[in-house]
Image (tube, rainbow, N blue to C red; front, side):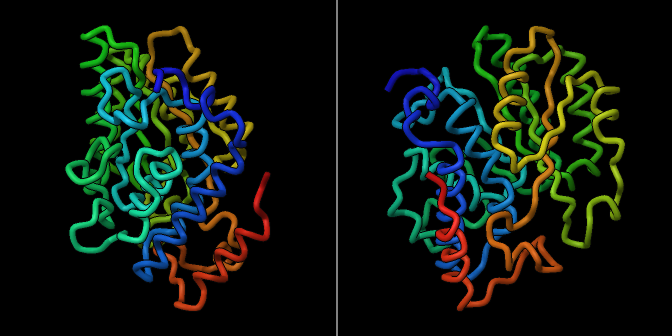
Length: 284
């Protein structure tokens, strides 16, 4: 495989279809265990589709290729979503989907870099991903490697002091190769993120820390494509953040309406209903 963007290699499949496939694979994995953070996976699927099939440069057969863009999953419990994207991208074989969360699986329920090809870091304790991203971006810059570092983090991580220390450091070091993706679904374990520790006005905060800021509907693929393109094309030597407002459980209407969505409960008979809901709206 060449080092060109996957968007060039896989242009025969729409990004909407890629996002649908990611959603479907995540639900299938959830059914294997009868649980999982499928609400987050459904919500972030469009961002992952644009990341892996439009923006990122990588080699599916060589996930440690030095020239690759790094995609960091700061939110380790979103692993089910990233596995679905890695399977769709051909980095992981689809048959491993059935092993999700089982003993000796390469797909543990919380992401671990030592287990899974394409998983750059072991996320878990929230608020660490952006700091790791700063270190990676500094290293790539020192080596004159043109690769980008993407860090996907949750809105809950905006309440961690380490996130803002990393943000300040990134601007100080003029890390134009660092792109932070904030999944703003306004959900935490204890309730709405905006009610736990409100981070608004969020865009103004990132701008005050010296970042180039964009805020988009994270379930609007054309808007995401435009934002990713603008972030990559920016000539100023400054880090970039794309705040993505997403809807938990996007694409499965009866789950979208659940009052508690951080760890959405899906009953045994509802997994197939969720797949049917997705199948009813399969894009071309």
